Image 1 (tube, one colour):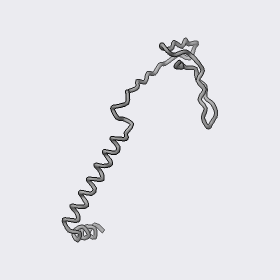
Image 2 (cartoon, one colour):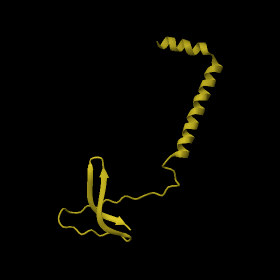
Image 3 (cartoon, helix red, strand yellow):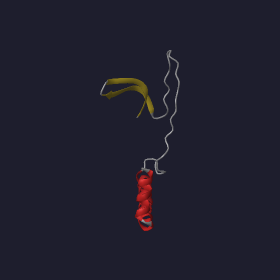
Image 4 (cartoon, helix red, strand yellow):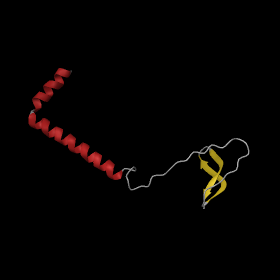
Length: 90
C-alpha cells in the first residue's frame, strides 16, 4: 500500500507536487487569519477576573461590593429552577 502511494506521488511530477504544497500552505494561512480575525480571545476584549470566596456552612453575612446588593438569583433551565443567594448588580 505504501509502495502504491509512493508510485502515485512519483507519477505526479514535481510541478504538481509543488502546486499542491503551495495550495495547502495558502489554505492553512487563510484558516489562521480567519480564526485570528473572528476569534473571541482577541486583545480588544477586557480581561475579566474571577474571584472565589469560601463561606462556612453556618450563619454567614454576605457583604457585597459597591454597586451590588444581596438578593436571590433564580436560574431557569430545562431541569427546573435553581435558586442561590448572591450579590446582584444594580
